[in-house]
Image (cartoon, rainbow, N blue to C red; front, side):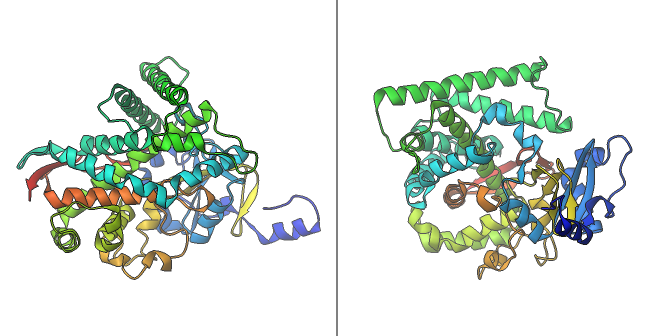
Length: 460
């Protein structure tokens, strides 16, 4: 950080460079780079990195911004959670997620993370593996050989059912689960509409989509608070994530989460816990259909390890190629393709001065496809992850779950779920893409196929 007083500060300042003296893409006088970024954000950022290098100055409307593609710079931003906070676009999610782990900052975030961390210990979440497989097999009972189907709703419904079972010990067909599912769908549609309006978040204005959004959140809140109240009144402890969160105590002062804090964490886990895994699976099915040789190798491993039985958590360490398929799918199509942070004060990234309020962008899409770190970066090659490639890469190159102190708390849960679901489905069905169906990555809060994913189901 550049300190403004003292001889040392003057000397330091002379050694730094002004970020906005660097070359960057041409911008419009009024809106800067906002139009190019809004039309095709991932393509625009990729072009910026290829043409201008490791740190690229941008302007989005009146907001100064920059794109980082130097791993050390990315790690610096990830590590300093106090200097670089969530960007304005992500903070707008507070109307949905409150002060949950995804949106909170400072001491509030630190306390909540400390309380929630033991809940996601690997030994605890392993207990949900059986439910994950059972929910998947229940979904497969509805699939028919030779059927043409858009599996995007299936993957969303499946992962939501798993989250609901893990959080509340609820079946997804229950009334409460349907209310929550509806609210999350409305929220994602609302967020995407705001992205297309270049993130102008006037949710207070009584437009129809804003009214639907607020009503859906109100219904979801009532449902969650009712569940919390019923659990407190009954004193039941079914071993689900909600009961663990309710029992969690701060090691320093012995306090527990309030109902509001529980509500915020539950809403965060429901959104983040189903949306990202569902999209990871969708992109995986697309890639497997396009690469039959990879699919055949996957099936060989499933046959060798599992035979005809269903997978379990104990099998995950032996399903090495299955894990590599998931890693490679998340490289090419990361569940979140762009992360933003905002500098809270004037600071320094590398040798460059960055002003307060600057939007700092770090794109998984850009870094994961960077030829400096990946051979044949556009190719789907799960074998590249053999021999611990992830540990050999510099930090800040591959980060599908973020990094630093704010790395996704549900990373272990999500990876376990993705492997088990992929193995369970691939054992019983081959999914073949419908020819000529458009597949367009849609970068909103998560990376979705904009027009769904239509496939033909072939029973094995």
